[in-house]
Amino acid sequence: MLEFSVLASGSSGNALYIQTPNTKILLDSGISGRQLQQRLQEVSGQSIADLDALLLTHEHIDHVRGLRQVLKQSQAQVYTTQGTWHHVQDTAGKDLGSRTPNWVVAGEAFEVGDIRVTPFTVSHDAEEPVAYRFDCGHSSLAVATDLGYVSDSIKSVLAGCSCYVFEANHDVEMLRAGRYPWNVKRRILGDKGHLSNQDAAVALADLLDLKNDPVDVYLAHLSEENNQPDLAEITVSSVLTEIKSIYKEQIRLKRTSRAQATMLHTL
Ligand SMILES: [Zn+2]
Ligand SMILES: [Zn+2]
Image (cartoon, rainbow, N blue to C red; front, side, top):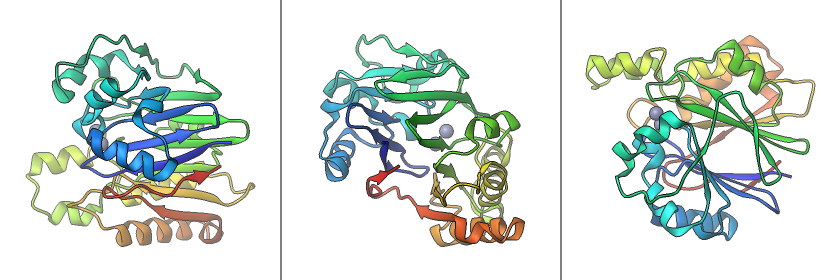
């Protein structure tokens, strides 16, 4: 049995908590230590000190803002690629202590307690970024944000999960018409940027296995500037329905927020 909560999601901060009765993992620490502590407590009754492991996806500030506090307040084992760790001091601060991380290599699965973790490469403008799939018994959760596109090899890692936390970063028209400078727009829209609402739907249609039970999809990492929760949901839903009408009943879209944690979801 896996349980998780998206503690925060959006361009301003990302963190996700996963637990089994034996194992407690934090995936990214992109909100302040105080907010992390508060939301962990709210959804699970746990605190930062209870964490067994902290996994990092990449070094951008919206994923490591609270890293120093997590390292200070817990004995959690850190899992990260060497590339991410190499750059993390540039964003999370110099005084990260002397903890030696466990090196993550894309494609090489590892165990944290009773959770099997599969890291995979994503195309994003960071140093050696990864995303992760988590398995425990028959429960599986994939968390895929901060990626410019969904390659065939990513689809094969993510196929058939029972639940997804999936990036729907922006609406392409809002981004194009918005006030960001052209080089930032080009970065977001590019192969090393973020998935649009449309991209998310098209990729999801390829990897969902609808022979099984309905699948929950949390739309994640929404841009504050270039997206709206309603718009993301309507776009993903209508594109999916256009591809296959059965998707309407079989995919349950859920929201995430930068301001509050989602309720603990049991898989
Ligand atoms: Zn991000
Ligand atoms: Zn990023």
